[in-house]
Length: 195
Image (tube, rainbow, N blue to C red; front, side, top):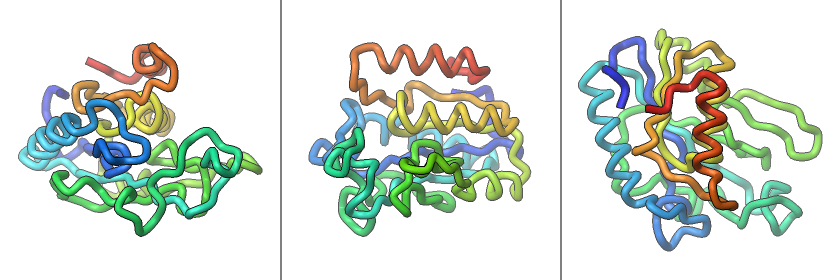
């Protein structure tokens, strides 16, 4: 948990969606249910401190090069307008939601998306939203630690935010053993605080 939340801090809640956080989800992250509870505690602290709270949401079309069915890495997940793409019903909602991957892009970071074929990077609108609200610090929580949380935190540092990841309010997918620890090391190397 960061030292304190205030009006210059933004809590970014990454992809706490049914497909990741529910055991029946197509890309369930082990520990996802406990992450919802831990994230809600951060949301409460952020709200009490007057921080901005923003959410990200994978929102993929049914067919995309992001999915293994179309040559990508991942099982079909978070297809727009499905149960799996919905934010977890127990998640406390206290702010706007930014959707990513809406056009079939790889939407790992909450701040940017990348076309899997051309490599072109485009913004999601999250940076503009946080800048409008005067955020200087970003706290990142959600799913999954070694994929979208990591990408969001690395982008936040690149964009000039003082960035913290609350590992207790996240969990890794771990496609390979050790991915979670490697993600923490990579984030720390980039200047992200991971207490």
